[in-house]
Amino acid sequence: MDIREHLLKTREQTLTYYELPEIELSKNYGEGKWTVRQILVHLADTETVLYDRIRRVISEPKQVIWAFNPDAWANALDYHHFPLALSKNVYASVRDCIIYLAEQHYENKGANEFIHSNTGLRTLKDEFDKVAEHNYNHLRQIEQALKS
Image (cartoon, rainbow, N blue to C red; front, side, top):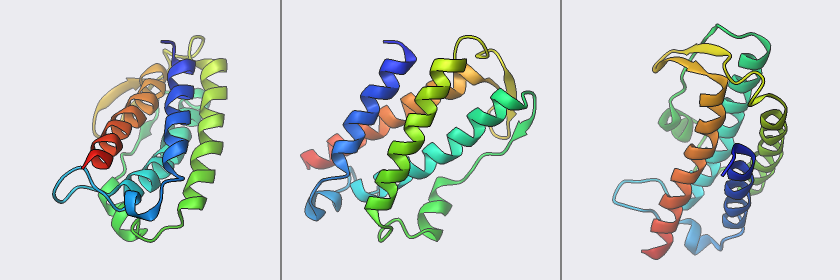
């Protein structure tokens, strides 16, 4: 599956979960793990962070880009009560932008490099792939939570 297909597929799967009833949104995939609601808010926030990174690497390669702490965001931004409709809109629109940029730059600028503050040397292709894999992994967590 190419990057565009992977991004589209995870987008469509994810968007369906934003419509779950509250009882389903409150389930988690393990003791002390995030709820489905928290995962969905996290996905929207992470899309914005990764979108910013992607644009920076396209426009200004070879810079240091700082990591973010997802748990700190979840706590400080109160993912338990954050309006899910807002997160859904952010997720959908930013994912569309990421798909557009992948179509334009995945191949021709994919080798652009940057330094991630935690993981070191990375490329633009790595970051596009991370968007898709990150989303995919959280979809598996949501599926696990909904089975419980």
